[in-house]
Image 1: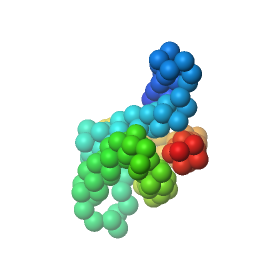
Image 2 (image 1 turned 90 degrees about the vertical axis):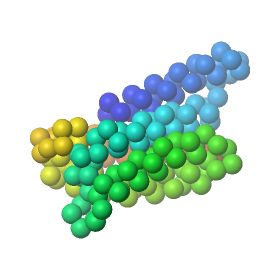
Image 3 (image 1 turned 180 degrees about the vertical axis):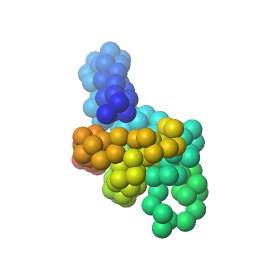
Image 4 (image 1 turned 60 degrees about the horizontal axis):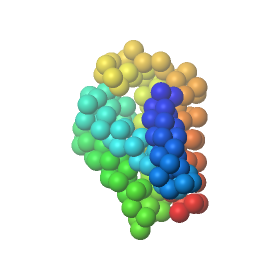
Length: 152
C-alpha cells in the first residue's frame, strides 16, 4: 500500500494547488494527475527492478525481459495519455485492461514469494496478495474508471 501514497499524495497536492490557483479544486485534473504520476513511477520501476519483475512473469511466457521493458514503456505512455483529454478515455480503458492482465503476474509473484526489489524468493507471499495487492488493484481500477472515464 506504500505505492498508493504516491497516488493519494499527488491527488491531494493537486487539489490544493488547483484550489489556490483556480479558486476551486479540479477533481478531474487532480485524479488523473494522481494516477499519471503513480503509473509513470511504476513504469520507471520496471527499468530499475527488471530482474525481479521478470521473475513475476509466468513461466509459459517467452521473452520475459522484453515484456518487463514493454510494460514499463506502456505504463509511462498511459500516464502521459491520462493527461491528454482527447485520448484520456481510451487510455483509461486500456489501463483498466492492463491492470486486470497484470494481476496474473501478481498472483504468480505471490505464489512464488518473489521479492521484486531483491530479485529473490524472500517476498511476503500470498498474504501480500490478499492484504495489499487485491485491494490496491481494486482501487486502481475504480480510480481509473471514475477519473478517466466517468468524469471525463
